[in-house]
Length: 117
Image 1 (cartoon, one colour):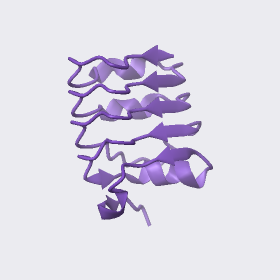
Image 2: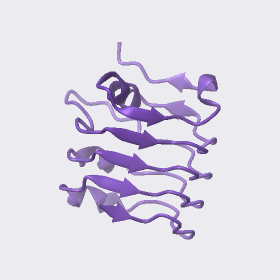
Image 3: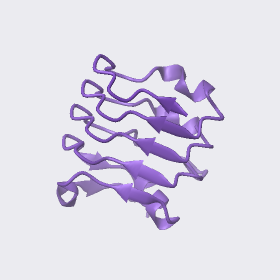
């Protein structure tokens, strides 16, 4: 587990985050200056929990196109109060289809959702 919750100065995650290949849980709750997460996060194939609640400056999630299943073990994704996110990528919907619990921002109905169909 990597707990960076309440890290008020974190603006973006390091591009080399994927080197923590065995990471199962990432807590970014209340990282209020966080604006983006890197696409390299898709290499975290063991990630089970990603909590980004109240990342109020977060404007996007990586829109990753891949032939392999992204985040195949993701069981929990919290985007509550991430109201600046304008687009929900298809890997989030896929996690839901596999039974993962996804908490979307309150305004999620306004989003364009990613769809690989």
